[in-house]
Length: 282
Image 1: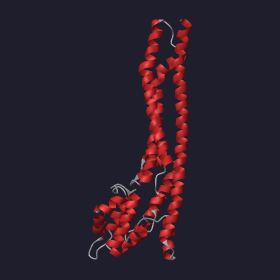
Image 2: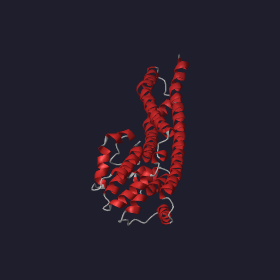
Image 3: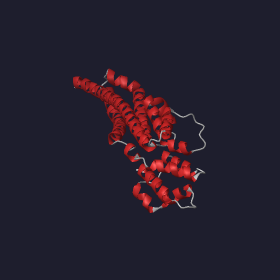
Image 4: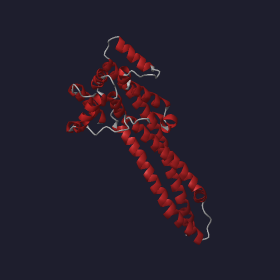
């Protein structure tokens, strides 16, 4: 709910700033007011919302700072940036699968396998191939599955950070090398759109503008509503971002499900093979 609080701060500062009060002081004052708590949790120090407020507060020109705040207060940001429940469920599913996998491995390795190995040794029977193969390579098997599960959790955790707009997440190793390329591209476009009011009001802008930013400059020059076009572009890019994130998590879920089914089959095969051997002897 930090976007609701961010929007309230923008509206309150625009309407209630004192004649001799700086924008930075007014933002700090509004954030301390009890009424701000009605709009959600405090804005985190490592979020894009905090960065925007700090940049607006640093403007030397008060009119330009208020102009940027007026643009932000006209946006319905909370409607576009809410993390979908189905995305949370996929991450929860991966966490649950990881937990269950380690429970099964622990029980099998500490309880099941030693019991069968002891019984076979007492009866001077040879170890079944499935059980022998597992005893020789179980560490590599668990390591491979662990890498897959932990990688899936890392990807899911970092994709969730996208919807929290944590600063610098677009430069993380996961988004650069493990996430689908389109996810990072869509997120960078969303950030470009969000920062446009700051760039529009700032006197210091040495960065080469993206096509989206150039388009918004054209919108501003043509006297169209910048807020309306920003809202539309954010809606489009957030929809694409969500679709791409869900697509990647869907593929990851399918891969994890396949590995889990294969692991269960392997555990059952290696567990039942000594039972059949003991049954023939008895």
